[in-house]
Every structure is written in structure tokens, then in C-alpha cells.
Amino acid sequence: MKKIGVLTSGGDSPGMNAAIRAVVRKAIYHGLEVAGIFHGYQGLIDGNIKPLERGDVGDIIQRGGTMLYSARCLEFKEEAGQLKAIEQLRAHEIDGLVVIGGDGSYRGAKALTKRGIPCVGVPGTIDNDIAGTDYTIGFDTALNTVIEAIDKIRDTATSHDRSFIIEVMGRDAGDLALWAGLAGGAETILIPEEPHDLEDMAERLKRGRDRGKKHSIIIVAEGVMSGQDLQVKLLEMGIETRVSVLGHIQRGGSPTARDRVLASQMGAKAVELLLQNNGGKAVGMRNHEIVAHDFEEVFEESPEFDNEMYKLSKELSI
Ligand code: F6P
Image (cartoon, helix red, strand yellow):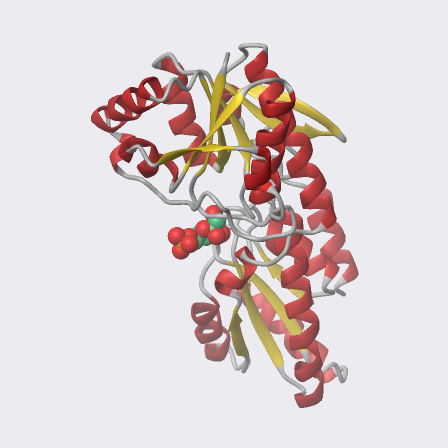
């Protein structure tokens, strides 16, 4: 292995830059050349590729977003797109590739590995929805962003005796909503992994009001329903709420120390795997250790969901 490529793909997440930096520096440390592929798989197909030196990744560890830009690429899902990508990799003499992204990005990496270019996946997504890793890069930062928002909304909710619905991202996963709900002291948390009973929830809110608790925070994961839909349903049951959709602010911002460290460890591990010619793997963190699993295992397993944490959130929100 003489030269490796690195790209970011799918929704960006804070800490992707720290991962890029780790890949570039670790590779150079071990005598490899590095090519940066811009705009994800689309950039790979189009040959949007430039060499990266150690100085090119200076001053980025603290920045949100991704200096390589990101994209969701439909063309790459087809065989023709993948063959064009392989042609570009060969033309640029790239022997291995690090793909930083989520589940969809891993599927692309697996396809390229099958076509002869060893690829390693690094989990970059705020959703924390990838099997084989306890945490994904960006989750911790997004979580802190959500908590900051909850704290601010709680101030005004208390002043006005109001109930607020806060819609949180996460695609089909409820981790961001659950962790934020627990850390933010939410009265109710709705997540896709657990069934919900809106009538029971409305009753609890009413009972709370009768006891004198006039404000409350309801966290709803986008994978359950939108904040607006929930607002309409609750109004039909006599509960008035305000809605706040946090949206893409959850994807931005300077990464937390935890995300920077995780990204550095994972980016370095990806390079180690390529140096061992050990492609077709996804890097993860399990029980505080950096590990790697075959892509296949990651696709077959469902991301772990912490039932105990959900139970605790219910016990503490009585
Ligand atoms: O996967 C990250 C994520 O932010 C999800 O939480 C969300 O559902 C989705 O991406 C939004 O995608 P887009 O930025 O394309 O609207």
C-alpha cells in the first residue's frame, strides 16, 4: 500500500474533520501518500481528487462540518457509477480508501472493496445508529447541542407555564432523543424503539397540571412523528403545546473533546487496518476499546438500543 484516499459521505457530523486529520497524519507518519476526495462518492466519480499533506489538515480539529465536503450520491449506487469510481481510483494510483460516514456510505465502501479496492469505514453520523460501535463521531456534540436547546426552552416554558414539544433528529434511531431527554430532564420522551400511548401521555400531563406542575418538555424523535403532528394530536386531547424543531443546528458546531478524541482514534485505526491490507471493515468503539468488524456483520446486526436507559428515563420523569 503506497497511497490511500479519504472521503466523507452522507450527512456531515461534528468531528469528521478530526477524523480526516487523523487519517492524513497517521498515513504520512507511516510513509503513505494521501489523496483527499472532495464531495463524497460524487467527487470520486468526477475525479475531484487532490493530494493532502500534513499542513492541509492543520487548524481543522476544532471545526464542525467537513473540509472534504459531503454528498449523498445516487449515481454511485449503480454499477456504472461504481466502475467509474474504480477507474478514478486506479488512475490516481489509490490503493485503499477510508470512508467516513453512516450506513449508506458503508454500503458504497463494501461495493468498492468487492471490486478490488480495500476500504475501511469510520462511523461519522450524529444519529448513533451504526451496529458494532457504542458511539458514532458527532453524536456527543449533537447531544450537547440538543441539551443546550432544551435548557433554553425550559426557561421560557417555566416562565409561561407552557408545555413544549422538541423535535430531535436521528432518522430511524432514538438515541439522540433518549440521551438528550434524560440529560435534559424531559417529562416525556418518544422514540421509535419503544411503543407510545398518547392518551396515557395526555393524562399524565393533565395530572401534572392538577398537581401544580404547569410546564413540561416532551422530546419526540423525528423517527416517531413530526413535532407538528404530535402537537395536533395532543390538541385534540385538550393539551396545548408549543413546538420547536431543532433541525440542522444539531449537525453543526465545534466538536466536543469526546468526539475529537474518538475521531482521532478511529481515523488512526482505519489507516492501521489498510496498512495491514485488512479492508472491508468498519471501525467502532466497544467497551472503551477501538475495534473493527466486517461490513457484513455491521449490516446484519441492528444497532444496540439501551432499554435500561429508557426505563430509567421513565422512572426519573414521574
Ligand atoms: O443522518 C443524519 C441526519 O441529520 C438525520 O438525523 C436526518 O434525518 C437526516 O440526516 C437529514 O438529512 P438532510 O440533511 O439530507 O436533510
